Length: 352
Image (cartoon, rainbow, N blue to C red; front, side, top):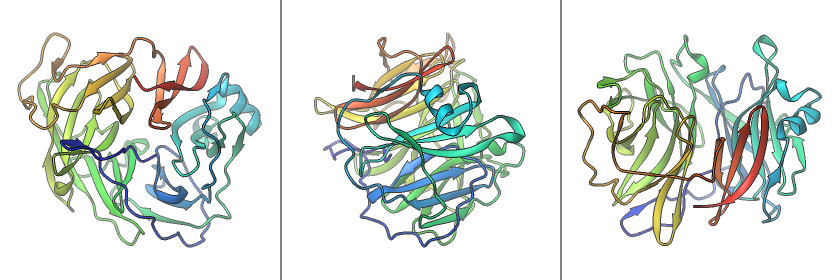
């Protein structure tokens, strides 16, 4: 979904653009599926890193599908049964809520290795699941130039749609391999994007090769930023205005959230009149960061020792464990995908 919310005076999320023109009807044949993002009126963007392509699909999913809680246990078994396979052959890559309907879309890989196949699924609030077929839907696509050849699975790691542009994070073959692109929609052409350099406090060095794992658009004062999270775990603010063709952009690291950790997903939300980032992590669980200090936070420019934590503090949400994906369900609830052992549960929880 578009990870946004209502405007606030000091630190505000980016506003969504008016409804975009519907794509023309064209065959959609995905080679893979990594990240998803929603635009207005059910417009779905699908990242296909193997094909180095972003596909825009007009889903037609605009009828409200209910506002109830979500609680689906043994999700892997349910997906496996839907696709005619077993849970151990299912990988859930992304989960997004369509704001136009409240329905849930899942990016799934069926099978392993050379037999792997990308699949999109749609789930209603009551847990009814079905494959979401793209072949008869209006769609357009855009090719990502110079996508990384050696790590093609990381050519597209995260997506968002804001103000008429699709923001794409991933790796390229450029000197600054970590790349962010702002692609106008409807699609026409795409440039080679901006190479991103960051100072990684826990590693004690500048980095240009590490991919953005997940990001959210956010407005600080009057300026638009992407808040990008990297492995081990710097959170970096990157001005949207700097994302130009061929630019080499230095992001500003404002907290280091702890090493030996991989950020998995994050959202922005408002509670009690204040904005927060909620981030799921491989080692540190789900953490909650206040955004009010993002604007004037002291940049981290020197090595950080003792576990790699520095800068803006955070709260660990102890009730949320095993979260591997999350999205904003509505103004009061988050949607979380929880993994316990090999079992997957998809459920809604109150925003902390």
